[in-house]
Amino acid sequence: MKEPLVSIIMNCFNCKEYLQEALNSIYSQTYKNWEIIFWDNFSNQNIKKILSEYDDRIKYFSSKKNTSLGIARQEALTHSKGKYVAFLDTDDIWLPDKLSKQIQILESNKELGMVFSDSMFFDNTGDKYNYFSVVRPRKGYIACEIIKMGFISTDTLVVRRAAIDKINFSFNPDYEVCMDYDLNIRVALNFKADFVDEVLSKWRIHNNNGSTKLGFKVNHEISEILADILKNHKIDNQDIIKSIDKRKKINNFYFGLEKWSASRKSTAIKYIMKSNKRITRLFYVFVILVFPFGIYQKGKEITMFLRSKIR
Image (cartoon, rainbow, N blue to C red; front, side, top):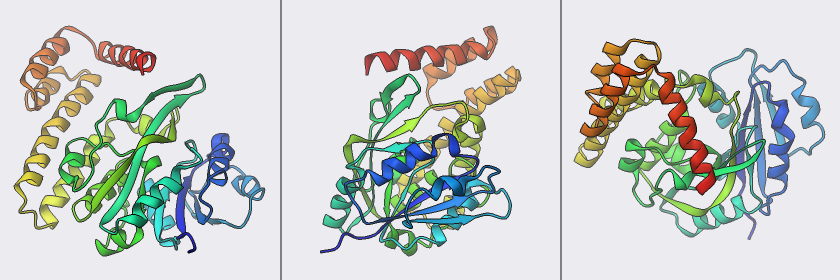
């Protein structure tokens, strides 16, 4: 039986630095029936020259102007023809058995809307730590868990196209960071999910990461997503409602950090006091009053360094 087609969405804006490594990781897949939907978001680099070195499984499309990543994701999705949809940003890479292991699971269970896996964070010095050492993945109906703490790395995600179509999903044009979190929640509200407890992808850490540059915008977009779910969907599941309430409190903590970073300490404390953990609230109120935001950044750097050493 012929392997089902997988559409791999790659969005690019001036992405040539790591592009060949990402493409080579797709061409090295043991699973062979795929297409790449390559959306060039108005780059000023000669991306087509790099792509010309590969075969016609790459379907190249370009934007007439630079847009949000939400728009770029949706434009690429409209050109996909696969039974399954996967995502690989041009600075990340896949391990060779990624698609074969995930498609096997999806094909064996028609109730699944998506399958994800563990991912390894790495930089130019080597591997740092794997994602599942930081977050605890779940399977089954996992909407509550995703809402509270997203644990799906987009570079690992494979989604059943029929699930996307059934919920009439399209990427929000206003989103730059959380359009994939939005997809995960919408699918999880209607379908089961599963995961492969292995590192099947590698997420590159560098200063030009979109998520790094956009920083605190993540939590603002998450707030918009949750507000839309409550407003436009008939949510009568109390567990979902409680999960949204908990996520709002988690967001308040990060809104507090954002205000602290802008030296607005009184506003930062107001947000922290509306966050979810009493001991955390009291600790951060003290720290905000006494220290500049740089102490938090330094502590985070040390934590990440230690985590990379004990993985």
